Image 1: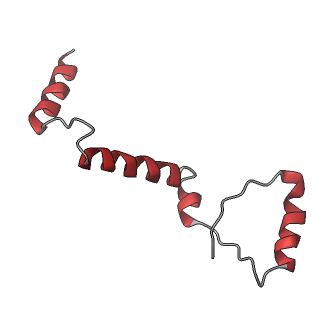
Image 2: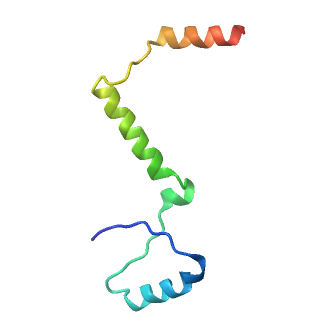
Image 3: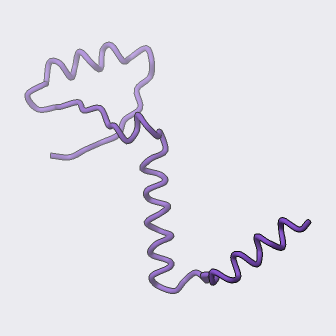
Amino acid sequence: MQTLSINIQDGFLTSFLQYIENHKDTIKLNDDANLAYDSFFYQRQKELQQIRNEIRSDKTNMETHTQVWGNIKSHLKL
C-alpha cells in the first residue's frame, strides 16, 4: 500500500469523494492526526531530521552550554 497527500479543488471534492466511495475496496481514506494538530507536521519533521543529520555528520557547529548562556546574558543586558 502507498500513502499520498493530495490537494483537491473545492468544486471537485464531492466528485472525488464519490469516486473514492465507488472504489472503497482499493482506496482507503484516513484522517492524519498529525496534520489535524499541526498542518506543517511533516515539513517540520523533515527539517528536524535534516538538522539531526547535519549535527551527526559535523556539518554544523554546536555551541557549548557556556556559550549559549553567555549570549543570553549578553542579550538581556542590552
